[in-house]
Length: 161
Image 1 (cartoon, rainbow, N blue to C red):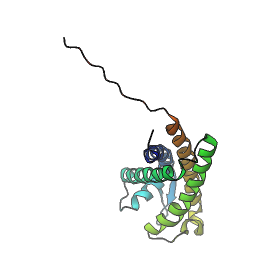
Image 2 (image 1 turned 90 degrees about the vertical axis):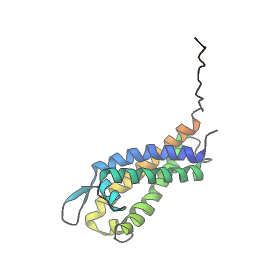
Image 3 (image 1 turned 135 degrees about the vertical axis):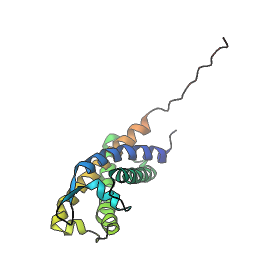
Image 4 (image 1 turned 60 degrees about the vertical axis):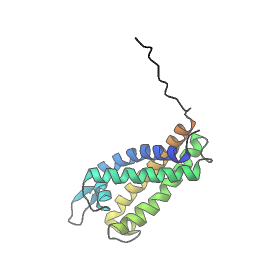
């Protein structure tokens, strides 16, 4: 039997990698009128502008959010249909909590600022799509890992020469 938390962590990392690629190629406007990859905005939460730091922080959060998914939805995820359904709903919930409330506040803005500011609405919608994709991949990956039979590593004993 596999751990529901461990399964959630691995599924969260898989989904986080997919979402991270989207955030690396999607740009957000900067106060000086330029643009920056959304992943750099993630890095700004921890005081950096490095894509590498953004990826590390993003994957840490992806694993944590995946672990919570495993703890909450393990018994509910039994088919790909309900896995992706619960995953999509969970992704949208995290868009509201993370993308619209926590991240704007951590970056010195206001909760729901991305949808209130016309210049940031496209970023908010891109974030919604990313969180939705994260949730869909999370739910599908979770079930795939959960249903995968456990494998054992066998070692062969060498006979003395």
